[in-house]
Length: 329
Ligand SMILES: Nc1ncnc2c1ncn2[C@@H]1O[C@H](COP(=O)(O)OP(=O)(O)OP(=O)(O)O)[C@@H](O)[C@H]1O
Image (cartoon, rainbow, N blue to C red):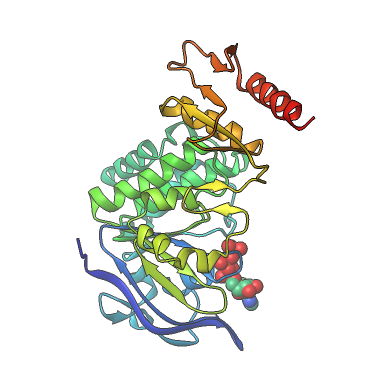
């Protein structure tokens, strides 16, 4: 699945006046894909997004839309190419959710700004698929940051552009909303052939759901590839310089105590048991002598250790502490 790049750049350099943020950038944004743009704080993600949108000029090189330099494309024409959800505050809070979403139709309504029946249906549809219909009549200043963020995404949908660019769209959202927004963006890419580019710090979601990653390497350039390649060949590690986080297992590294236990069992009960043990400094080793039998079903939560039964992992950890402490005495 090698889709055509809709946005591309070669030898691009970005920054502010004398301050070069990233250089030698060669990037392709592909049609029908979700691309997540990641990198440490201050590495230049927002700067590159703004440069791609034509909101700030590159220091060197050019960004092209279907091979044509965006600097030669009129601003009003760009509104049919990109919809943008940046982190800047809204200019006015004195409008309703629906009015905000409807501003996404402005490039289509002409100078009078009046919405046709079809425009209204598109606003309704965008509210519906972002789960914000209940916010339509609420004043923006009465809404939470997360609710506003979802309306901004609805507004971008309404604009019906081939490219959607978002800067940290999940920043204020709770877990369910973060997952649903990233899934929504992925569906827009796959089912509606949009090119979606989002800067994000959501490593787990990006590794699972992005078609491609762009990685901003601080002070250097942008690396590009599919998530698994970037993990396996070490480029993700090179960019983030992970400390205390094991990327391959997706786990935070905990202090090892040299205390080992063996586990039987499977599924989520096995995983949560392992999690509790490792968080408390125990290592799971299938050759260890001490055995814990993990319950088979969540309806019967009983762990077995040394012929005794425990009804919570907290009790199991206490029992293990006693066993290992008595061995050291
Ligand atoms: N308006 C500006 N003028 C001058 N320098 C700026 C400006 N905005 C950002 N910078 C600098 O450019 C660099 C990149 O900032 P940018 O906001 O693009 O990073 P980012 O990767 O989006 O960071 P974060 O993950 O924290 O949002 C930083 O060193 C920042 O201080």
